[in-house]
Amino acid sequence: MLFAPDTEEALDFVVALANTAPGASRSGDDELATVADLGEFLRGYTYSGRIDHDEAELAAVRETRTRLRAVWTLDRDAAVDAVNEMLREARALPYLTRHDGSDWHIHATEPDAPLAERIRVEAALALIDVIRMNETGRLRVCAADDCIGIFLDLSRNGSKRFCSVRCGNRVNMIAFRARRAETG
Image 1 (cartoon, rainbow, N blue to C red):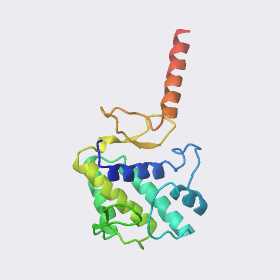
Image 2: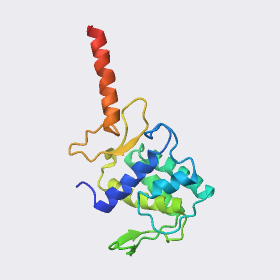
Image 3: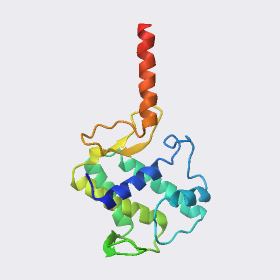
Image 4: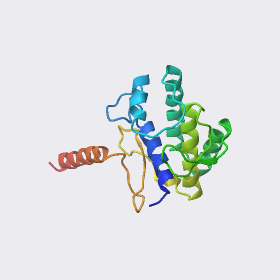
């Protein structure tokens, strides 16, 4: 395991959130187009605390999605600036807590803070580990020309290129057909 389980879990959430964007999602559409879409998305994750289920929250989460996607493309030093900015904006103050059957873990915002702020801060805390371990190269954007999906490369040698098997197969099939056309 490259990162601590809670770090990987937070980064997996960021990937899932970022990959709801048009061009990154399985459907190709914005999969956070409505408040109901956000509610459905959150059902797959354990987010405690305040959730407003309104248009303002949806807009804030979508803006957070954009900001977190951008961090994936930054070099290490620029990622530090982005992480520090997210923590400063939230006036994050880390503390240990346990709730809802979870053992001790870190929070840095109050449970009544807006959902988008809690998402940014949790992501920032996970990104701190990535930066400190000098593993920002593991934060990748899909190499398929028609995909903007992001992923966390946890392969042993850090050589993963695609966000999904689907993208990898599609690119490989296109390359195969191009080679066959050249020889045929």
